[in-house]
Amino acid sequence: MAQYFFHLHDRSGVLPDAEGQTLESVTSARNHAIAAARSVISADVIGGVLDLSGFIEVTDEQGRIVLILHFEEAVLRTV
Image (cartoon, rainbow, N blue to C red; front, side, top):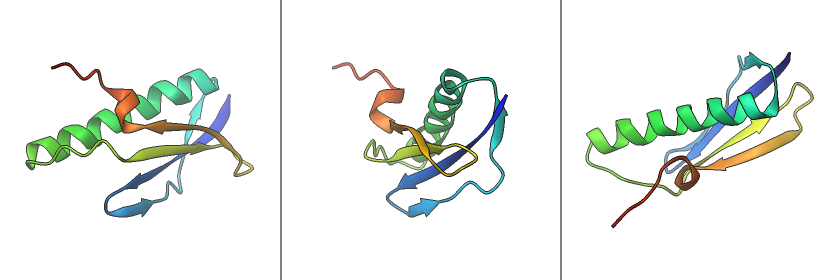
């Protein structure tokens, strides 16, 4: 198990994650980031905004970036 931190970058700026989450792997951290991104996107859409330019930067306990999940990776766009 490892501690991961999910720092939100969107049109409002940066919201650092001071608490983090204890998860089994980077794959689990990616799944958590996808769920978090979808939550942010959903709240924005309810407010009448669809902005997929944001991202979540995931770091480990040492502050190293282990992945960056762009909002557009969290959804499937169809026309």
